[in-house]
Length: 270
View 1 (cartoon, rainbow, N blue to C red):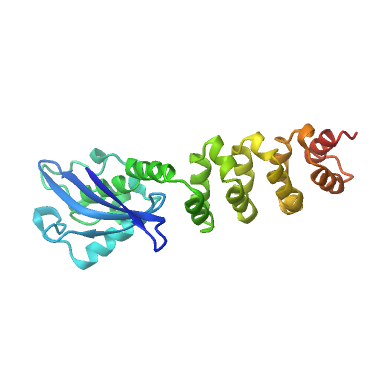
View 2 (cartoon, helix red, strand yellow):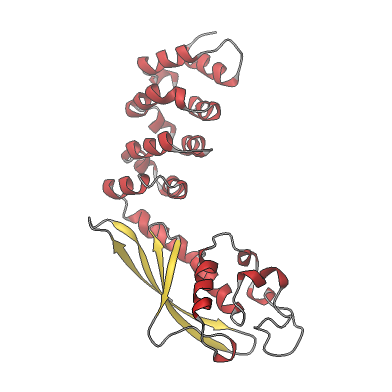
């Protein structure tokens, strides 16, 4: 069970979430409850946790967590690519003895030993899958429902690729139009394959609009080859503005390439 509370910045904009998590931890022969707070960013990425007074974490045989255990749990939960993602609970241990298989007695699967806490294998697994599972999806849906100009502007100016991809995934066609300046900002400042992927995701109607063509007339030469091709494939020659058309003409090269073929089709040149 989760109790979700938004965390706002000094301007009242969403900054992240505080999530009260209550979950059973089931070992081989018994279950016990764990209650603690998770803190995430605005798109549900786990940042940190804290325990509640009187609800401190314990290991096998009710041994309390040490300070080192709490620090280790922070590192485990912060690892988005943990090997724990590939394991079901029943795969965590090998039945080498009949009871108390939670500890490091040869029963814990060797591959995960460096990614869990001795005596708290099931706790680490359960909490990691909460932090990086459906809860994250739920928080992203909540954030998307709060989209407005101020929040989207705040998100894009973080220059975080993961946040940018989140925006692409959760923007509706109407959102793409409404937040076009912010999305063009992410393309201008994006690295790697992001600009290409963004253009492939954005509706052609948005890319053929006057504001988009004005932007690309100024920035076309700064785009890499594959990003240029992704854009050219979505342009409509009937809607091509004269300034942008002139930029495309000037960018033509003597060599024959897919990019130049697409440009020639748009400008009506052979």
